[in-house]
Structure formats: C-alpha cells, structure tokens
Image 1: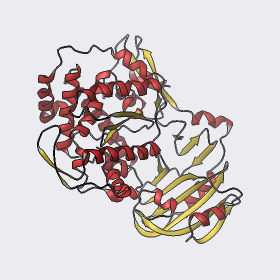
Image 2: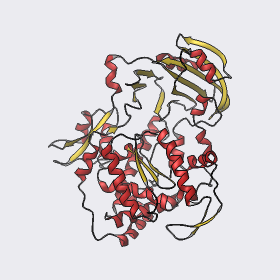
Image 3: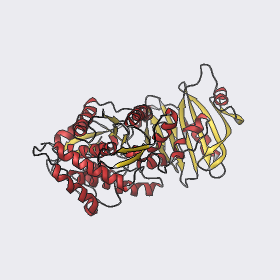
Image 4: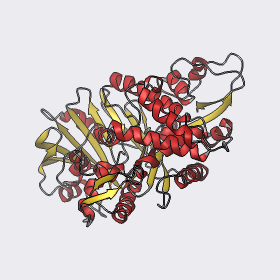
Length: 478
C-alpha cells in the first residue's frame, strides 16, 4: 500500500539477494513477474517494520491494541496466506491512514479509528490491508515508476546529507496513493471476502468506504481552504460507493463466501474502546494551536508567522508559507556536553558559511544543499533550549525570508502557566444524546478549534447533515 517507496529504498539498504522470476499469485493462481521470494518478502517486511516504529510510535492503549490484533488475526486466518505470521499495530498518529508491508505487517492509525463506529468498519479496513498482502501488491509493484525521490525527505537537510526534501506532506500522500485503482479494487474484493468467511456482512465494506469517502470530501475542502495538500486514506476512490458500480460488484461477489454463522456485534461495545482515546495531536508529539506549537514534556512554545501553515510530522515540524514557495523545518537533537550553539552548528554542518550569533543561545549560517526548489542556499540555525538543540532549516524558491526565520528562532521559550492547557491533548468521550441535542449545540461545547460541527458528524458517521437520535451513544471531543 503506502510503503512502496520505503520498500524500494530498503532493497538497496538491505542488499537483498532477490531473484528475478515468475511466481504463482496466492490469490488468483496466475503467474506474476516478481523480484523476490516469499522468504525475502518476509525479511523485507521485518526490517522495514523497525523503520516504521521509529518514524511513528505505537499507541499506548493495551485494550485498543488487543482489539486491532485479535480482529486482524481472525481475518488473516481466513486469508489466502494464512501461513504468514501477520502482525497488526495501532500507531500513535492523527493521520487517517492504514497500510501494509510485505510479509504480513499491517498498520492502522488512531486517526482512522476515530472515525469508526462499529467492529465491522474496523474489520473492513483491516481486511482491505490483508488483501494487499495476500495479493502481493507491494512485491508486484516494487519495480514500477514511483516517487522514490521524495524519501530524501526534509530530514536530510538537517543532517547535512544529500537528498530531495519533502515539505508539505507530499511524502505521505505519494505513499498513500502508491497503488492504482486495480490493486485497490482487488484489496476491497478480498477484504469483503475475508469479512464474509469470518461471519461479517461483506456489504459492510461499502459502509466503510462511504465513511472514508465522507472524510476525504471534508479533508479536500479543508485542505483547499488552508492551501495545503490533503491527507486522505489511500483506499477511497473518486466517487462515493453508492455510485461506484465496480466496487458494488466486487462486494456482491463476496456473498458466496458468507459464513452461515453470522457474527453478532454491538456498536456500543466497540465505541467504548474509543472512550478516552486521543484525538488530533498527542501530548507526546506536541499540540498545534493557531500559529503556535506547545509541548508539555519539553516545556516548549514555538511561534510561527501567522500566514505560515504548520504540519506536525512524526520527525519534524514543517511550516509552509502561504504561497508554498518557502518552508521552515524544525528538528530536535542532543548537543554534546558543554557544547555551545555555535560549536554544535559548525559540527553539524561542516560547510557552514557566514556564521553569526542570533543571541546567546542561538547561532545561524548558510549551507548549500538540494531542496524541493533546486540546489541552493539553506539558512540553518541551532537554538538551545532545555538542554536540547532545535535545528531550524529555511529554504525557498526565491530570496530567503530571513525575518520570519529569525522571529521563529527567537520565539522558542518555556511554557507560561496559563499556556499549559494548550499543551494538553483532546480526548474522545462518549455521551448519551438527550432531547434537544444537535451537533450544532454539541459543537459549541467541544474543544475543537474549527469545523467543530462537521468533525462531530464525521466522527459519528453522519456527515454531512445527519443528526443524532435521542438515547444514541455518540462521540464528542473534550
């Protein structure tokens, strides 16, 4: 699915001795042209798993992790490759995403789980990802034309190594869309089949896609208003499932696999797993509020220019100017003991030019590096705060906008007492709908900064204009 580019780079890093040849597809029985044996596929997945866990952290909720793993294992047991040692991991990420590595490593984010309202929806997403593994989509597509250059990533600039940076979430989006329509449709067909044989209604797959399509519609609208790339789940197609004839056909085809013993589920039992789950940014990763970034554990506030959009990525903060022609990134590093900010930056960037102090705890200079705008000057700085080095990098398609760069560097400081509430994460809570409750009224009581009414409808599967029924158990944000 969305790890194809990482897989290709891992090929080189691992130096896998993959043999070019033909193999029988485990699902169709047809002959596929592939570049690795199953043994190599499993080895690749195991090695890449370490990189995923390093980039994203595991979400520390034992009950939710167990729910994901137990349900995933039930589906995997009914798959075409049940002999694989499938591993299911819930990631601590607000992104609406799920993906699979070759060899049976499957990941789902707490972000996508926030929008689920019953066990069948979770089963549908997991079944879809299992389908990518069983049909060997990652293996089959590893030599196709891809976005390998994106994996140079912004981090290469901070480390001084070469690479092509990815500023605006394009890395995630390119990986998310790593498969074509044919593979996604096949994964939905297989997911529906695995639902059926496990005892679920395969038509629930249409409901899953519908909910995700609603979330995608809202995200596209929001991204356009905020002048940024959208962050959407890979498996959603261009049309709503009620209008997608091919999707409906592959789901109907799964009816022949229906288990005569249907699984009986209670949506409220599923919802209770989400009660208290983190929504949006986590305290561990830091909270964006307006144009400021807050982090409780680091005792940190960073203020960005008001017209720059902030993206809290797993390994760095990225701020993109409104015209998308300049970007600023911030990463955290550990300086050597008794090392000054100037000594640190000169060590970090041996080719540093025009070095100068910003203040007693900050130092800046220029380096020449590859950027998304081409090879050119990058302004870098180190700001010492709380025993850590905050490494800032600024690059642009035109003259470097030094003023907002220095303003951001100078803004790095400790939390004030009244600001600590901004560093606290939002939580999903369950409430029983009372007479007169509407999403508009509930939105006014929520902690959501914007689009509160729309987000509550999405969270409860009632987008764009549904309303809750009296006595219904629904999700709100506190």
